[in-house]
Length: 157
Image (cartoon, rainbow, N blue to C red; front, side):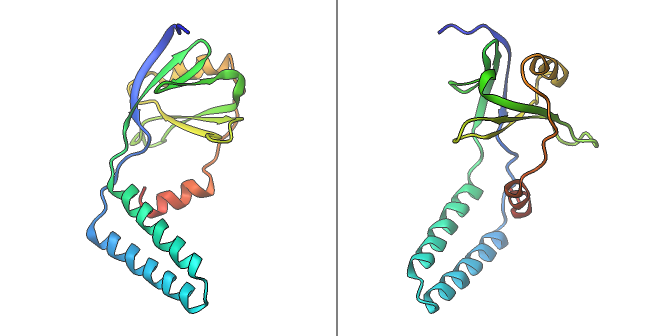
């Protein structure tokens, strides 16, 4: 299917904050303590889960996020090669930093189970143009940070 591209830009899913060795040491100490506590209570499966989750968290903290290509088309928004149609979007909001230190972001709530909440950086594109285009096709609503967003920010992600 040929899609007419209205706007196109690139951005990263999140800002990469390199972690110091102290952060990894703290993560390891907390994981070992949690795993030992689980073993003492006889919950070996939880101990294994804690160790696996700690490894996944450490690997995620070490890698730099990939660069994604975003395209605004008549049918919706394309992230990479995946189309997110306007019909599957519940609401949207453009989030802007009042201090201007962070780039504006487009927050979209969708009907999808796999990606119910999309956060798209609007760096390198006019946020007012994106806002006006979305306003004609999707309901605007106030979006707040989720508990997962707050925990991720607290962990330094």
